[in-house]
Amino acid sequence: MSQERQPVRPLGLIPETFRADLDQAVTPQIEAQVTEFVEKALKPTTRAIYLVGCGGSLFMFGAMRFLLERSPIPAVALNADEFMLRRPAALGPDSIVIASSTNGGTAETARAVRFAREAGAPVLLVTKDPGSVVAGEAADIVLHRSVEAKQVLQGLIAYALLRAQGVADDYDEAVAAFRGCSQAFETAVHELDDHLRGIAAACTDEPCVYVLGSGPLEGAAQTFAACYLQEMQTKHAVATGSGEFLHGAFEVVDGDLPVIVLLGEDATRPMGERAIRFLDRHNDKNHVIDGATLSLPGVPTAQRATIGSFIMASAVTARLAQHFEAFSGRPLSERRYMWRVEY
Image (cartoon, rainbow, N blue to C red):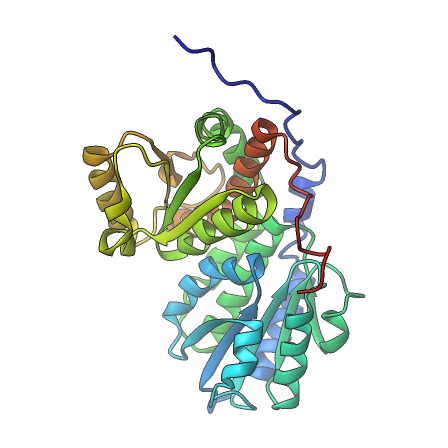
């Protein structure tokens, strides 16, 4: 029997402020700030909601965009540069732009915020740093303290937009769940930690890893593959929707392909389950992270799918990345090109 693979560097710590950062994500003051923006920005003539960012900030709109599918006004997520180059016809006073840049240093997003404001669109920026280059282009800014807090904050923004359109009868219940979810986030990390360690141990030395997700977790799959594995671990990885996996990508399955499936409790769960059934028949290296296994203390049943999506898209993927870091020895803070060369 081969010896179990061992980490080559210490596992990253869960921040001491992990729960406190989440507890500050949806305070009454932030709720009032978001509500004020929505009441100012949303008009009877509003035709489109644009979600604008780059990389992880774009992918992490996944859960928010899923919530906004209840909106009579269509919500479209676009890369910041593509947003400017495509110049959507609906952009202007009769649209709303929600821009996101975690640390506020993304030049493309700064340009997109300026572009949208010059077109007359109301823009709300979600970021950590009010003194950043992106924040310098924004008039309305709402702050968060962590990627986990960002998910919850974006949930609040989505619900504020839905309530203003009369399609969020569950607004109070949802916001109460957002405010009380920090224990669920922390517990989820502990409950899954051994499983995440096993996935990293099995996949770190693989030449390529596929990551699947559907609905609110399709963005989480993109975040993990593109940001954590490709960008931070310089590792070949492919993200695909669980449904679209069965319309092309599954042809590369040869029995020996490492596949990570992010499975939520939302309406698209059957797509993930279908992909898993195929993989169980035809592949031997399948790793399922199932949100339904989480206890989510304090989260009402009606909000499990939403809070679970937030957790999977932030805390779970971030913790899995820390385990990859421990086994590979490559720090998540290192880059080959980003912040190092002109591009």
